[in-house]
Image (tube, rainbow, N blue to C red; front, side, top):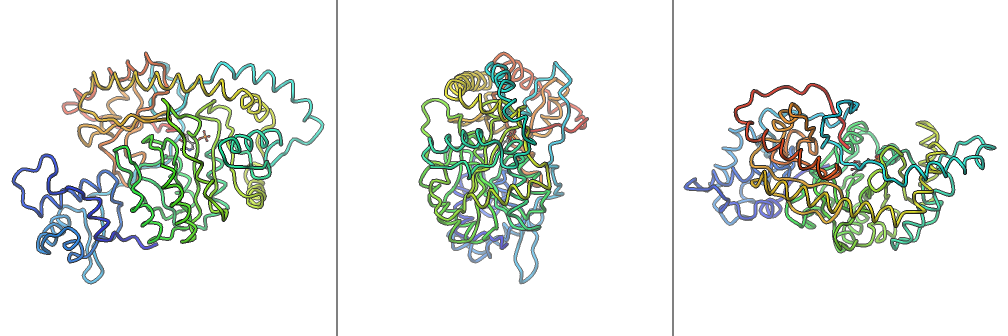
Length: 485
Ligand SMILES: Cc1ncc(COP(=O)(O)O)c(C=O)c1O
């Protein structure tokens, strides 16, 4: 895949680079180099991409070529650019280290630990009655072998109804039930991604998505999301597809994890059209689609714009219902579902029948359960935002219009150090670099609002204390890996 940034694209990303806050009397070339370093550190400009030739960037920015040359020279000296004569210059980070994108499981056995590493709610009260009702239904299935590689028909019908109600007519044959959305992603990648195939993802993105891609040896390129309301830059996103023509793009348009962004309808439509024209298949992760907050109106599903089976939607019950259910699904064309089922036989055969029956009962009660969850999340989000404003006013957050997470912009590149120190104070965090590649995103921290309000206030109080002590603290090492979900 070509990974090259054109002059006009870099100029767009750089924006008001010559008037960045903190700039005093530094010369233009130093300001330009600093702005490029900032884009790299925030994951907006990917690593390993070729920057425009000096002349091209000078024209795009309407500055002299000498200024660009000097900026590139400084970037080479600081280890942010590697150049080869005649071949161009590629972005890098000094002393680049790969952040482990695999979230390993640590049992949450420390009851005093406030776990902000996991963005998922405790089970709703309706779960136990649903589980009891499911056991009553089970005898209907006991006469068969119990293997249903695409899922039991009642659940496939219920999931298909959900899509149809969202304006995307769907038949049960187009649904395959999986053991969670993560499993859905893994199966789709098995089917659709040849080893070494190119995949475009957002930066930041869901860490376990990156882990799945790494397991399939994907060649990953990124589209950097902005921290303001907009999130995706349509021109740059579609430009990356046209230029790189990746085999797949993995995107989270509804209340994106971790930023909470919602992709507008107009970009969804252009995205699908562009993907089709360049031969890219889209994996659309709808994990958070049931959780708009306030009066946010959802745009049509991305697949509603699809006429050529380019869009595979994945989703599940972990966020609105309970992660412990391990129920997810794929929505694709009926032939794709058959191929996925064939691939699945070599993995886990089928999902447990009893769990699927529990899911059927929960979905029958969906409006009431989801309305409760949205009320709960709205209240918890507001408590978290108020606590941050009171205790850590230097941190900036954009209020998410849905989902379960805030993406906080910190007062410095301290996210990993903060996470290490916070662990000692009984707060587990998912630091910014877990959501990107190659150690970028140190100025960001994901904060879920899935814990009860009192725990969120307590956690922010502890974080404020840790932040205060951070500069003087001796940095402890990670003691153990932790799951991030
Ligand atoms: C974007 C996204 N996709 C997938 C998952 C995994 O979900 P599941 O528990 O359904 O496997 C998560 C969980 O955090 C997520 O945020």
